[in-house]
Length: 97
Image 1 (cartoon, rainbow, N blue to C red):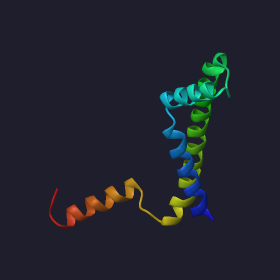
Image 2 (tube, rainbow, N blue to C red; image 1 turned 90 degrees about the vertical axis):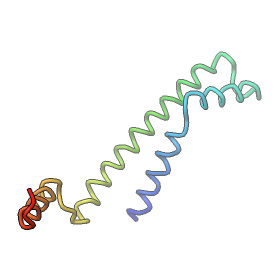
Image 3 (cartoon, rainbow, N blue to C red; image 1 turned 120 degrees about the vertical axis):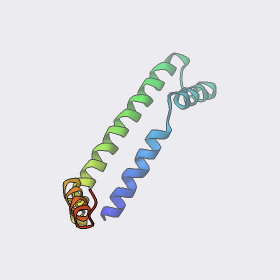
Image 4 (tube, rainbow, N blue to C red; image 1 turned 45 degrees about the horizontal axis):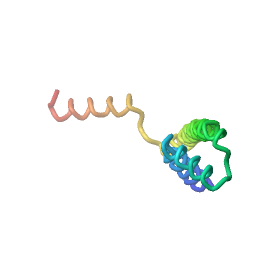
């Protein structure tokens, strides 16, 4: 279940990150050319797409942060402080400074 959520969040993030302003403008021009978007609405379309991208990025970041907080403790990884303490202890035991 959590693997699915992580994969979904990553894919959503990649999709959101792949849309640039240039791509949004290109999409708008294509829609205008097809008659599916009024030329006067082109700027609003680009603005809306870019806002959607930013919202998507924020949502992905929030999901990734949540998943990290949920999953990382279960991995039982040492903290930076614990790692540095062990590193210092090993250096001391091996006669290095």
